[in-house]
Image (cartoon, rainbow, N blue to C red; front, side, top):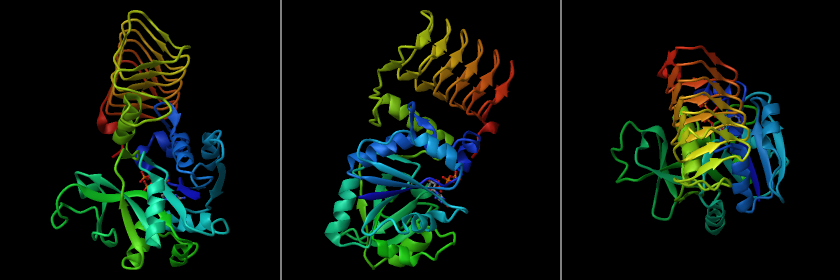
Length: 356
Ligand code: GTP
């Protein structure tokens, strides 16, 4: 089975983190998102993964690392963004000759992709959409099906749940199985959305959807990026990290002062240093080589590699990009710093720095 993974977006909602780092390369619980995705695709029996990218392709290629055994990886680069359908068509050209998986490259999930493939084959479908349940449908594309799983209609980001039946509502989870004939519906060299422009053409023509239980989160916003990291270290999402709610994961090369306090779940990366009196956790990832000064408090936060936080600072519900620096007694709440950004001493940043 071949999988095409869409990783060409600019990740505007995750700026400034994504200004020099494509979203799929950002770490989740210390492991690049793409590596977690490759683990999952390998487990589903995928043997060839085609990454469809355009934004920062060199960083993306470098972030793929070593693929799991038995998985061949190829990177296809668009000159211009082609939208989700245009990108799939471009990446698939000359590379697929049977049903294939297509996935959004910013969805963390442990849903059974093999079950979607089996449902697609059993139904003789043209296209099959994986669905995930949500309690609030207003931010998503709701997919309404009949009892046999045939898609009847789409309701994009409804203002409320009126007319959608009882909760939970099932929304497009961002992973599909497609027959190559679907590509004929996509005009070449144009920006085309598979969700909004192609799937509606297939209603009543072999378009099915399959409910997938399990973990699901789109990491597209700072809040969801923080939550995904907390889920990985807290064990709500199973990854190669092996996190749990009570685990303190401290790299053996990190230095934690005896008088520092760690509150699980916490992940402290290689070579990091935590000074006396610092309070770290819960739900904190400290990247490799980062240093936290004396008495600083870090809670519900992700610090990428090489971050420096001076003494008596407070970091809460925030993400700090690689090599960012925070001065003494400063506080960051609901904020994000880009790569190498510097906040001086005695500053107070709140959510005006958080992109919506
Ligand atoms: P925002 O700018 O914050 O909305 O993020 P995004 O750029 O990632 O867009 P969105 O979340 O809507 O995209 C969903 C998935 O499709 C992501 O994995 C994107 O990388 C990918 N994607 C979106 N547009 C394109 C495109 O034109 N080409 C390719 N190759 N991938 C795309």
